[in-house]
Length: 388
Image (tube, rainbow, N blue to C red; front, side, top):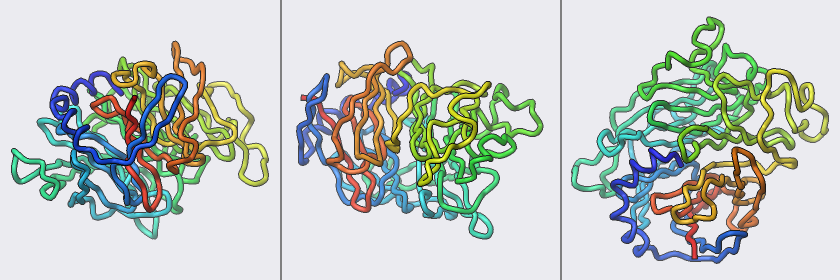
């Protein structure tokens, strides 16, 4: 988790940590890993394809469900819907209500960023992002029945909107300066190399939705100025390292070739010209192979695919022997994957949970240092990893 963002959250959450732990009545399983033994607590059940999780300053949580419902999870794990989502949100294929992120000044501004699939003409759709305030009628209470979104402001809409229901991206990352929006190729792979489209790119905006003057393509009249990097197939995890310097993403490959990438400004990540994957079913080659001039190599890749989802760098406050490691979920195998990162390189990979809890959609380090997971199903769950 970004160190500065983490500090901003901890300033106001720490007094609630003990209450949050003691209030749990959960079902626990014990897991032994290479460096830690931990319990897995089931905090909430019956979530409908939960997709993204953020913590509020009182230690409660907000969870997005892909079918278009936003939910508040209290510190005692009571679940209540939050009203006020955008009217044009559409639940379509892999799309729907997607990523969430809080403003770094959320304590004062109550600002939340929301990614979702927005409907367009003739059945087309695309990923859009709005900024809203998460308010309560009573400023002294965060009673779940009072939470509502207001002052919704559109910030970004994918251009062009396209048909089909695949590869919407949807992860969000807020830093002290910028808002990053991860997009997919929408099943139109060639567009990921065409910067006149947002498709298959990582977007960087100012917090108000304007374009930073030093974005890499602002001087190119044929390119979308919001683009920060391109050549992505479908980014499904994004985080920033603990010193706030490097943005990490992972993305789904085709049949094989899921990738982990540190992001560089203006870089081309190759899809579909280079990939370590092949075409589904036939196994035939895609593009020109695995390397090409001017295109980035993944730092780490998976063959066969694990379908990674969610990404977090561990601060180590509760799991000290995981400090600086990356955690990510696997949709395909129901894994929690730990990547040991040393000097910017992956030196080892550990696979945990082994499908016991189902498809892992999101991975978040909480303000208490514990690890929180969302499982992706019509009966999805919120899980917590607690060291023993």
